[in-house]
Structures are given as structure tokens and as C-alpha cells.
Length: 474
Image 1 (tube, helix red, strand yellow):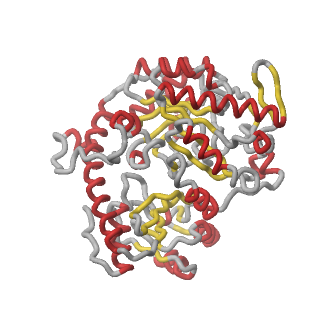
Image 2 (cartoon, one colour):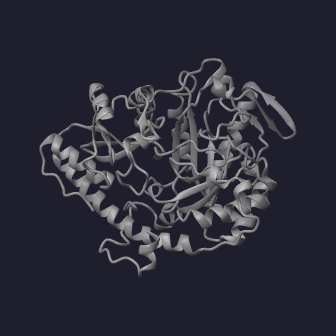
Image 3 (cartoon, helix red, strand yellow):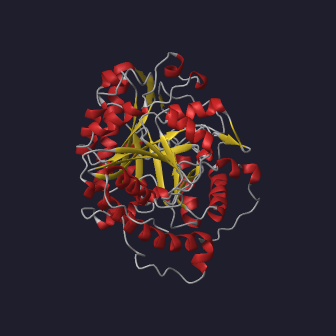
């Protein structure tokens, strides 16, 4: 990509085409088009990084324990090392020099970015001076948010994520044992009521300032799963841009209250059913990866261990060249992708079959089928139906093939994770896993390797339901 960019630009006739919908305000599109969390299309091309500068927290959640850390897991609040604002600046510059996809810097803890405000603010101020084009965003539980909305606006922070799991304090009391507010600790329903009031106030203040908000909600079966329908309605009425419903991560090894008491997380089919039921409320985000508080890279990958403090150079100087070249190439690639996607969706809609296919895709990014089945750590899931082609989520798996060999037990786990999937698309797959998938009723093919995802899906759909397929996109 960089070589192409330096050779004189893009000659594609579709270069410059946009994935913006016709009803979206152009000013909003400018804010989200390169933000991988706020734009499903952007997450194929752009990377985020989180810096763990805010360890203090003002609430306790029954699904959280920051004392546990595995470098290979992806879970909010988890970090391998905490940073000072100066260390964070050095790390951000080092990453920007090596990861040209970087477009967003976020602070998501490992505590609360608004409660540990001095460190958050100092980090943003340092980074903005050195890399003025990087987008700044924070993630917060919302309790201290109203106190800092003005400063966020002054620093041009135009993306804020608030975790809102309830609007009924009776439900909230089952999720939050305590909060610390106004120099006091509150518990039970009283704590949840204060938290709810502060979250709604913060959301309304952000909306009034024109700051885009994404609401994260953790789906906890039998606790707030049905209640999240009301949460969705409330946050939409108060101007939330996106609503991201995430599955509870509940592993006893993490030491959380929910994990230790046997509270289960939702199955993928349960999560999808809830998300589908929210279609009339706030717009849903379905491509979240529940990132660590020190994540680096594209969504679905984490390169954080490449940039620990002991691996950073002692002195770093920002070089904008790689990021500028990458953006030039991406402008061309996105145009091609938009054109191919439009054609693919038209093919699927024209089939008028009344049927749907669930397709799991092995991809490294770029919106293409470009990952080996055995190397995948997740599959992106798409649904093709009379409505078109929609990204509906992802399924995390343990990598099946290590050192050229695959483990049967690992493959069993991959197959279990692909429950109810009709077809798997990948760049390459061996006969053994292909046969095992077939035994489980899941077809797999590498015929469409390196095609755009939507192009491949439309060809599959056309073959399945007897319509004229489109040509593969180079």
C-alpha cells in the first residue's frame, strides 16, 4: 500500500466514493469516517489505540476485576502496564510511526477516564500538540462525566463512550455494589439512582455540545437483557449516536463477582436476537471487540505487546509520512470497496428469494476474504437476506493451526463457536477442517479468497438461490 501511495496516487474511477448514507449529515460523516468504532466501514481500514493512564475508578461493577491480566485476552479494563501522561505520549508517537492505520487515541481506563481526569487531560493535551490530526475519545461510566463536558469540548474531543446498563435503579442495584460520589460511598438502589441520573445528564450535555456519543451496554442474561430495550429507547431520545450491546464476559478465572457466582454470559444467538429487537431504537454497533484498555491495532487484533515500555526507543520523533501515504491509498481502496459493495447488495436484493444466509468470514482487514481458516482468531459474521448484506457480529475462536499443525480439540471449539453458520469463507482451508465442518452441517470454501467480502457473499447467494452471480473483484 505504501509503495502504491508513493508512486503517484490512485487512478481508480471510483476513488473518492463514500460509504456515507444519503441521510447522514456531512459534518457527522467527517467525524466518523475514519473512526473504527463509530463506522463499521472504517473498521476495515483504521486502527485505534488505548493508553492506560487512568487507573482510579469511582464505581464497582459485578463484571469487573482489573487485577487479572492475560496478554492474550481482550476484555475491557485489562492492561499489562499503566502509563504516565509522558510515557503515553512516547508510546503514541512510537505506534503512529509504525502503524499507519492509526486514526484514534482513546482513554478507557483501566479505571474511569473522567474520574482520573487530571491524567486523562494531561495525556490528551500532550498528544494533540504532537499529532494534531489524531481523533481523541474517552470511555467512561458517566458518574463524573457532567463535570468535564466543557473541557472535553474545549479539547475537541468529539467522541465519548458511556457504559449504561440500566435506567431502572432496581436493576442497577444488581449490577453495581457501590459508587463513590461527592466524597461519599453509596450502595444499593440509592447508588444506582445517582449513577443513572448522572449518566443521563452527561449524555444530554454531550448532545447539546454536538459531541457524538456511543452507549455501551453489557447484556447480562436474567438481569438486564430484556431491560436493555428500555435503555435503548432512553438513550436514543437523549441523542445517542450509537448503541453497542456487548455480551457479558463471565469466566471464574477473572475473579469477578458474576464469574464466581455462576452468572452466565449470553450465547451469540441470544445476543443477535436482542440486537435485532432493537432495530427501531438507537442505531446499533455490531462490530465491537470489547477491547483491552491498552489495545493497539485494527479491531479484532491487538498489537499492544509490541509496544510495551521496555520495547520503545528512549527518544521518539513523530514522522507523519507513513500515515499520510496510507490514507491516500485507503481513499482509493474505499472507493473500489463501496462500488463493489453496492453491486453486491443489488445482486442479493434482486434474488427476491425470501431466504437468508449466515456467512462467517476469515479476514485480516481491508474488507476482504484474506485470512487462512486455521490462522483465524475470530470470524466476522454477515447475513445475506432480501434486505441486502449486513454485518451482524463476530465470533472469537482459539487459533486452530499453530506451527503447521491443527489440534482436534481446538477445532471442536471453533466448530462450536460457528453454531448456526451456513457457510465459512476463507483464503485457504485444508481438507481435514473442511470435512469436519461439513460433518457439523457447515460448508466452507476458499474459492473467493481475496475478494471483497460482500462480492463473495453475493456470489454465494446467487449460486444458492439461482440468480446471475457478479464477477469477482480483483
